[in-house]
Image (cartoon, rainbow, N blue to C red; front, side, top):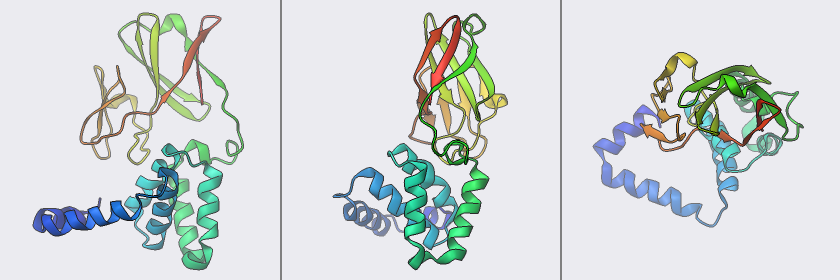
Length: 209
């Protein structure tokens, strides 16, 4: 949310509540993926960088594939024009979302080797650097473990290992904080870390994405 909107919410709460209710009601008959795709287009049209950085990962979370997002942007060419599309793609590239890298655009989900299972200590948080384009946090509890993408679900900022304090992981950009034992957001935001299914195979921990 922009500083201007934050100000108006505080200065004119009644008016802004009505405004956001209106926006919510206008999309109540659309599925989440369609709403998110439309939001991406509107953020590009208004060239709202912060909003675009927020709604691109939201569209993925709501089920849109990278190709569907690119199609939506390109189909809006008559309204957006080439300059705004290039502006948006520059931001997308700067975000470095793995799904949008050309080598991964058509990739099917597959298992990725992470770490030797014996190196994942019970009750501790482990970190795996650059596993096929991703950095990974792992929390083990007995024979179970949770595997998370290191990217914040807010604007896909890559959260570094140094941002971990005990089991709490805090994004340095907007200070969303997460409990790595559950993945839940415990401060500032509302969305959990992205979690991957995992398995132990031949003594190695693997995750699928």
